Length: 262
Image (cartoon, rainbow, N blue to C red):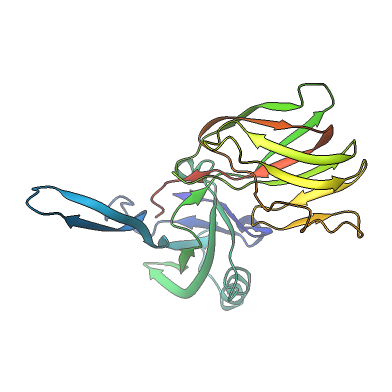
């Protein structure tokens, strides 16, 4: 692998470096992906064990190795600049490696533990990458919509989700008529599960983030108390969203990707 990569707002080509494998054969080890803790229980005289739980027990972790594009040794000034860019304590950021293996794969991670590697005449750096999740993510998808007819449905949302848990999207919409807003997804097993926001008015902008924050463009709207705090969830396959009020806006989401990063 000799690949450019982006981390946060910057790209590796701004620093004149690329991601590589220092080893002559990149496929020479055993690499771990999603690690789970499987708990089982044997009951009575049974010869089988039942699964009690199987939760992820740690995030993914791998090494990122970089060298100068022209293969010259990384200088002291470069070490400082690269560590300043990549090693920010206490925060996660998005890493994208421009390699075929990592096509449509984004890692939400913290990069730390900088080291200098010397292989023959090549001097590069190695970092430890620890992800915020046991899985990787897709690029961020944006779905724009405008619902003004009687149907008021979004019918072309197809989700490719590698995980069993639902995806939590972000949505920003402008309400075009007053009333009590309701949004439902045909994928919900509980048909009564809906996102509701009461007392919205035409022209109001409602924003719901993937982590469950909600706000209104109207300062006098007590939107938290007017919402049932049940947020949209996307599932693997076709998702049909139905709205009861005319509105327009954008939905943003990332799909889960199960991948062994190395």
